[in-house]
Length: 97
Image (tube, rainbow, N blue to C red; front, side):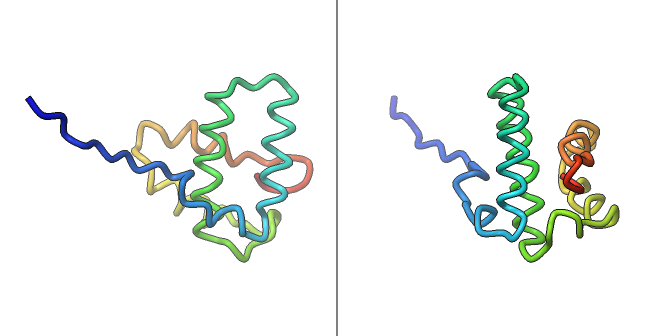
């Protein structure tokens, strides 16, 4: 019996989101969540959602995201996960995200 190679697509291996204009804001938001006691799994889920947003809109400032753009992003996720993904994009004191 031979083992088949399994390739898993990890969206965080695509690091383009770290070059986006809003990347620092997102990193600060994730750090704030971590300091607030968010679990590693929660932080990972937030980062995956926000990475997809930043890859799609890399020139946006955090405050520039519109409801339409967030809706477009959410439509890319399975219907059952959209509610939680939407929570990842909630408004913070520094603007959206």
